[in-house]
Length: 509
Image (cartoon, rainbow, N blue to C red; front, side, top):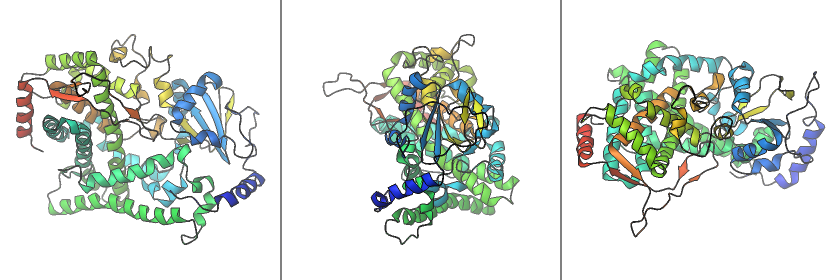
């Protein structure tokens, strides 16, 4: 994104003005407690240089040994607080309503229109209305009523993996998109190039990097820049935001209007949107944006965790074999897994917890905003602070997990000795916990169980047929999943090939 060309001239002036306005001065602190510790700030710019590096969760975790579980940074007018332990994050985010707000990003929320989404809403009546609308349709029991859609989508995916296993990443993207669109709107998707998949991917890709501190647009540092006219030299960010705002609104409205038309014609497939419209016909705009929020948020994170599953199975054959043995012992001959089988697959449940822990999909979590001054652990936490719960630090904390770098589902197996349940933080915190967690969890379960039932996943091979270690990198964005790795995917037997083909014929997508 282009920055203002006059930055080099006006930056010093802006900082001086902010300093003069008192934005660097101390906030009211009657108890006179110190702010949490952190690295030494630099004159005027504070800790800005630290925010320019990628993968901030790694930096915050590295600082834990030096500064502790709560780390404070400051840039002009903004307090940033990272929470590096489960106890601190639980005490603050789960047990107090003060942290239920979201930081509002000028570029993304105000100018690009994301303030209308459930995730983008600040804590208030509009956000509460969204959550109230979604709650009945996102419960475990409500999602189980859509089990057939999960199974149809999964069986189509298995057939694709059989024919073109090298395209597993594309198949996973289509699967997650299919399930979310069918659940949210009752609409059928046949291709990963369908606009109902391409458009939300484009929108998410545009946003995820802009909400991390190291990618902060200039207008979020100097909010008064939003008042600059769009025609002003260097104001391309405003012209872009206007276009992107319309694209977002059109994308959210398109499938919603299709559902309304199908309902009017009496042909609508039951979905989150149709159910909400039946129960709350007077809340169309809120339903449109609530449904759009689920549509936007779910596919990317679910795809990332499923990619991690393929990487984990390729590098941990002993885990794969044990999981397959459990599935084989539970399923009847000639049967594929269903959502109803989950209760009888405890080791698969442990595997899912370890997937969430081993490589957190949102390692720094979506930031919260502190709505009023608070005190904790002998420190002062100022109102307006942006709070970053560091899921990565929690997942790698030896106080929570023995040998945390190891992928080992057995750590969750014995209820008496089980380590910290990763589901307590994998989907967010407190009142801001992900409303779509049950949908995502059901998608992950049916995918993991179905693929393990039918395929063996192994390491890639070189030109001489020798196994080589998969090379995977995790990006620095808000959503982090393995990128650019290869693996081998083979059906477990000729019987499994017949099962895959028969299953796809019995429940065609």
